[in-house]
Structure formats: C-alpha cells, structure tokens
Image (cartoon, rainbow, N blue to C red; front, side):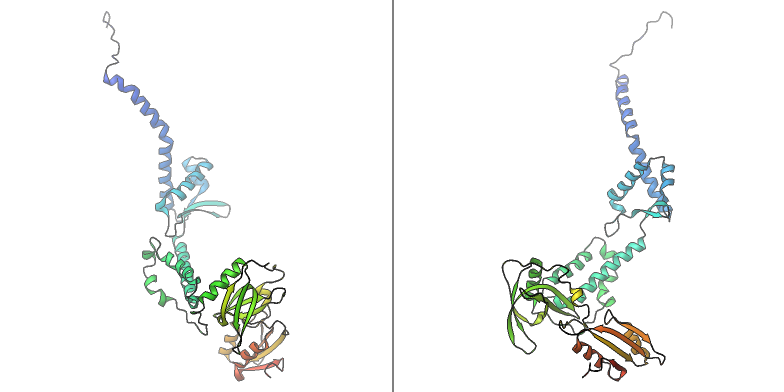
Amino acid sequence: MPGAQQTRPDKSNKAFAFRPAAARTLRRVRRTRPDESATLNYARIIYELLTRPNGWRVRDLIAELQIKDRTYRHYRQVLQERFASMRNADGESMIIEVKRGEEKYLCFRDPSQAGETRYAHLVALYLATQLFEFVKDTSLWPTIHGIFEEMRRRPGAASVFSHVFPNINRLFYYQPFGTKDYSHHGTTIDALIRALINRQKIQLVYRNPDGVAKEHLLEPLSLLLYNGAFNLVARYSGDKRQYQFAVDRISEIHLLPGTFQYPSEKEFTPAKLYENAFGGFVEPRGPVMKIDLIFAATPWLKQFVRERLWHRSQTFEDLPDDRLRMRMQVKGKLAVARWVRSFGRDVELVSPPDLLS
C-alpha cells in the first residue's frame, strides 16, 4: 500500500527461525533418496523373485530398475550376505545367480534340491557311523559320530528332519558280516594313526597266526581297511619291500622318537601294492595268475557274480550255452582258491589247472 511502512521479517519469529532447519532437513532427505530408492529396489527384487518361478533375467532387472551393472552386483551381494531371513537350514543364501545359455538369471535356490542335498548329507553321515561302529573304542569314533550329532543339533534341523531323526536307525540299516572286533584295540589304532601322521618309527610285538609272538621295528606306511578289518602296511628300515600286519594281532606298540623319510609316490602307493591282489592280502613274491572260470547257466548265480567288483581286471563273456565266463589276472593263490571253492559245483575251473590242488 502506498505510503505504508515496509515491514521487515522478524528473525525472532519462530516460523522464520524454522525455515533454515527445514531446509537442512530437506537437504538431508534429498541426500538419503538413493538409499530409499535402494530399499524399494530390494523389495521389488524379492517380490519379482517370488512371482517369477524361473527367476528374473539380469539384463531385464537392470533395465527395469534403471541401474548400472555394478549396482546390480552390489544389490545381489547385500541380498546374499545381509538378509539372514533369506537363508536355508544350511546357512546358504536362497538367492543365487544362475546362467542359462548366454543369459544370467537371479532366482531363488531350488528348495527341493537344497532339501535333497541336506538329506544326502544326513544319510551319508549316519551310514558312516554305522560302517565304522567297529572302531567305537578308538579316537576315530567321537569324530565320526560327532559330525552326525552336530548336524542333528543345527537350528531348524528338528523341524526339517522331523520324521527322519526318530526313525533313522530303521530307515537306513547296515548289517555287518565278518567284521573284526576292535573294542580292545583302541590304543593300538590311535598309536598307529599318530605314527603315520608324524612319520614315527614304531616298535611292536606281533602274534603270528600260529600264535608265536615276535618283536618288529617298523616304518608305518599305510593303514588299510578291508572287509571290516584293519591291516598295517609297513617296511623295515633299509628295506624297500612292504609287509602287512593284522592290527588285531598287535599285542604291544611303542612310538619311537625322531622321524623317518616317508617314501615318494613312485616308491609306494597302496593302489600299486594292491593292484593285482585278490582281496586284502598281498603275496609280494607270488606270480600273477590268469584265472579263467565258467559259471553254471543259473540266472541268480550269473547275476550275483556279474553285479559285483571282485577285481579290477575282471571281464565277463556270455557263452552260447547260457553259461558265464569270467577272466581276471590276480595274485593270491590261497584267497582265489578259497573263493572259487565257495561256489562248489556251480563253477568250472579252466585255468590254472593246479589252482585247487
């Protein structure tokens, strides 16, 4: 209004004083918009993954969210590492990136596949406890059994395996046959394990099959598990030949101070030692025999023989009269002869003719 006195703003006015603070707040809000945008993007990604059974193609995700590739990689990392609620019972992120052809997809891990993996782990561990039950008196048992118990105590395991845990001893059963009893040989096995790991010589008292006890000074090379029995493979100092000792026949054992030079792979490997062995015993100076057998034309017998791995060199041939021919090259005359005799009249020995004599 003309002639009216112009009024200046009163800086003591509270409304005026609030304006700079509001401006600062607005600037902070503007600065936080990228984070708010990221939060919305995280929510959008999870929503899309829930509604897309095959996942979200990565290049489509980047285009729709209008982000750069490096931003996508950051989002993926955050979702996988920081979203604890998006983890399965094994602690793995349920969000994964997979490649299908030339395209990458972000998707949820297949729950059925994850469940199958967990069940496979559980069954494998339980069967291991059953297979190695004959070593309950050794230091091996707490470790083997402890891994299974640790899986049983995992968070969420009781609900995931609600049917399995109470019934696992019935769902999966192992029937031992002919295994040796090591309940009184735990100290011996523990000493052998320490000697093998530390490359220590051992002094032991060994009882031969005829009952004669003899002292031996040995360099342990390997602990062989065959058909529910432990055999020690060892050599004498200065002798490159390997010898076998049944662990349950060791009546006394002592670890000696110092170490020995463990042989190179060229000098010793169990696989090479047992390459031609029939069973778990090697006859080091015995010849390699060409075994030729013909089994009777009995369906169950032929199936029984054919479906098992008796020796790596075995071959089979169906004969015109429905009989089954088996050939292999092995060492160990006594072991092979005992095995052939177990079939009685259902097997014909072709060669060597003196095997059963």
